[in-house]
Image (cartoon, rainbow, N blue to C red; front, side):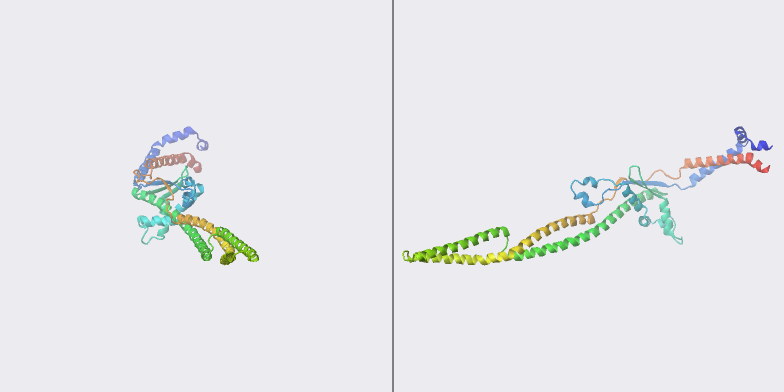
Length: 364
């Protein structure tokens, strides 16, 4: 008897299964019926999804103002940028925007006296949404809901919210850079204007073009000095020989000497003033050129920062917009019925096996 209970083979198992085949069939049938009822009782859920790529370069100025850089403007984001985007999609800020937009607290019937309605609504939303990276490095946003229209609207709204969040983050940092560069730019503009005012004051005293004026004044000064000396020498010669020369010759020479001296005296103050101011003029002019170049570079940076701050571009490349699904995604009725049927069969078969082969051993 003991040997019969403890030793069995496949034939014994088949015999027992055939002996209780009606029981096994009945339990299996009940399981299948339960599966059918359950599959049709569960409220179906529809899944809507949208697919998009993340741009690789968020800087508008670097993409549009730099030469031959439009390729970067059209490039897709790498894995690190995709991971950062997935973090944004899973953020509480984005969830709260979706909850507020579609009034999900009341939609999930968590209002009234429900404890922790916001937390429970977030969990429900999280269980009905899925964010994942595709094999081609795109991002897929999928939303399941009993209402197919709401599922599509939520998926598209999440995509728009992400675009808005990325834009706000970029503009927030862009504003900081813009304000800093703006301050530097206006400060440098004030310095350049101050230098220009000093140059204007010097130019009002007669210095306009150092090199040209220097040549002209030097030439005029030398000619004036030469003329004075020449006329003085000529007058001395005439005076030594005045007995043999008419008085008119000496008078004309004295007149030319007086004219040469007057010319020299008229030029001398201008040359003296030019010499005093030329050093300061040259220093200011060189400083003005350097500061003007620095101001031009700051202006380029200022314009780039302003474009990054105030410019608005899409922060994702939309590949597929969520549409209203026509067929429910969950539950899979055929799979559910199959699983219930198989589970009932296994339970019934193992129960028969236990009763026929295992339970008698404990009785003995």
